[in-house]
Image (cartoon, rainbow, N blue to C red; front, side, top):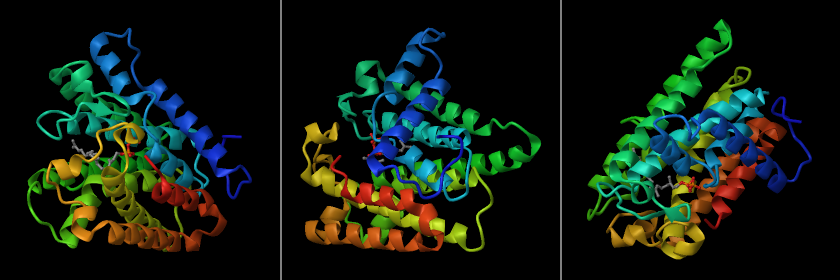
Length: 305
Ligand code: GRG
């Protein structure tokens, strides 16, 4: 069933999602060093940060995009897990007292609370290295060129011109008024870069994309990355800590500009719908091959946590 990414398939979305979340879990478990391997405390904390939590949206996007190019499932699983490891590292560092200073993540104490700050710092560092180690492995010479492109894409998406850069802007934005374009630039980097990268990496695990297809996929990735953030801001303002598994209302408390504070609730909701429509339109050239990407876009916009 899981040898190659399939084209349009009759499995209901919920079942597809659960099966692919399980594949992502399995791959993360395979990649992470065993707790018994020294240094045990660091490996225990790495697993604590990664295993058994989170929606796994980034690996799911990679799996869904792999269906566009008939990508081998095992290769997509590794690429998706690499992005998830970067995501997990960013959450661990973001929660530390020198950044967002939070005590709850994925329904449990954050890593620096459960362990200590030095360990949390090392967990982030080590997860980042592990992501690149996994992504750089390739079976044959031809696959190596493609693997190298995937490594470069992930490096770009997570560095100062991607997620880390967006995080720097986010920290600088506290207490300031941002225009919508400024907010968009910040989030396109902080959240959008990694989400877009997951999507592109999934597709790049398979046959080359056709003329115009890469641009269409990048358009999809950009818009769904932004939609993800708009919904995140709405949830931060409207959902409970219990539902989110992380402290709700943090943005307002920290005096951070968000889509809700810049646009207001109603306009932010409408903006999420508009972005969703743009993302769906970007998938049109792919026809039935984009079935799962379309369903994931629906999930991202309608999610409750
Ligand atoms: C520390 C370099 C560095 C970057 C941190 C990701 C990030 C940048 C900060 C996290 C703060 C935050 C709430 C960002 C908004 C979007 C986001 C990444 C939400 C969390 O992602 P989900 O909903 O989380 O995919 P799960 O737990 O489901 O994986």
